[in-house]
Length: 91
Image 1: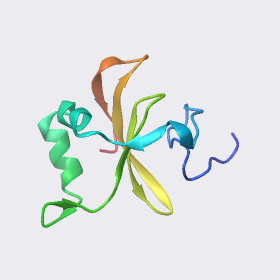
Image 2: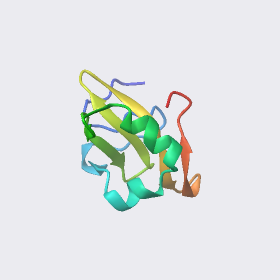
Image 3: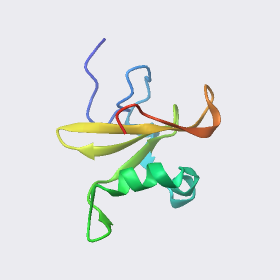
Image 4: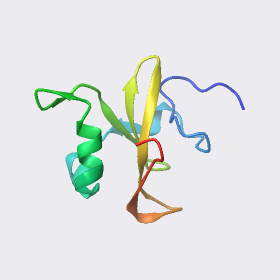
């Protein structure tokens, strides 16, 4: 597989480029179960999330940017899993 650009979706099986990446909208964030939101929020400082959280509008990958790498939290609302949340095993 060709190396992806940092602005491309970090999911190995997604071919979406930078144009399909966007900040995770609060309405989508509210769909993530509370326990998983707590795990994501554990990366905070005084209640402020220290990392930008993004979502690929193509595959639904939800991830945090930790330059020079990114951490996948899970997938939200995509054609393969439907309208639901699927946490990453590394969350």
